[in-house]
Image 1: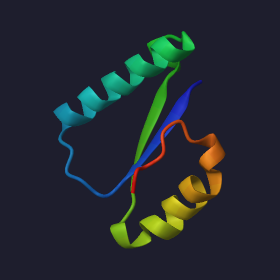
Image 2 (image 1 turned 30 degrees about the vertical axis):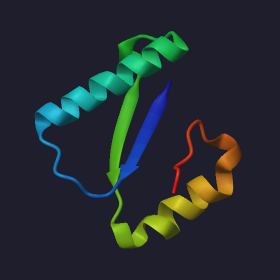
Image 3 (image 1 turned 45 degrees about the vertical axis):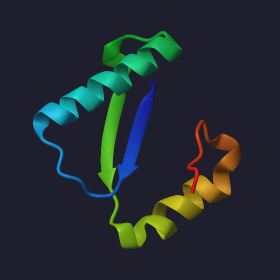
Image 4 (image 1 turned 135 degrees about the horizontal axis):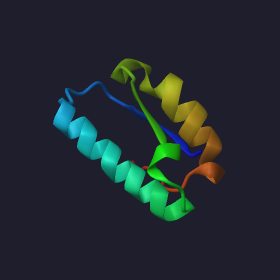
Length: 74
């Protein structure tokens, strides 16, 4: 605990960028929840732009606004 899944359009992330992203997310979760680094897990899940609305936006954003910590501005 905690586990975060980052869904995103496919993007080329080299090992350095992935490591930086993981470190920043881990630090934020560690600070917010008061947990050790070893308890944090992070997944990256690319979603094709033509599938975004059906797989991510509608079910996880539009239909769950009450769960969002930050909503998109579009």
